[in-house]
Image (cartoon, rainbow, N blue to C red; front, side, top):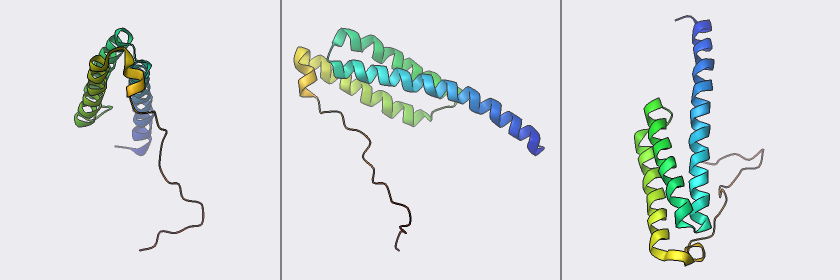
Amino acid sequence: MPAKKAARQSVKRSGRNRSARTSTRTTLANARQSIEAGDVALAEPAVLTALSGLDRAVQKGVLHKNNASRLKSRLTIKLNRLREAGPDAAAAQEPARGRQTRRRTTGTRRRA
């Protein structure tokens, strides 16, 4: 296949994938926020939409099925903990932590 055609196809596919990936991340974030809010009535429909969004992303080839399965499992575990804990669930959960990766400063090299 000519490189120009491959480049055109790549641009088209990345646009489609970006849309699906963004909507999936948004539904996941909404579900997590509703769980952290501690309201079961608000969290249940948000989690259901996130689960169906993950399934849709797998069908479109945006996510691997095992990755989606892991995310779905973690969401349902959090929702079940929220159901068991009742109204005091917001205080019982762990505090949300940001990304915890060490970043290298420029100029450093990894030593073998």
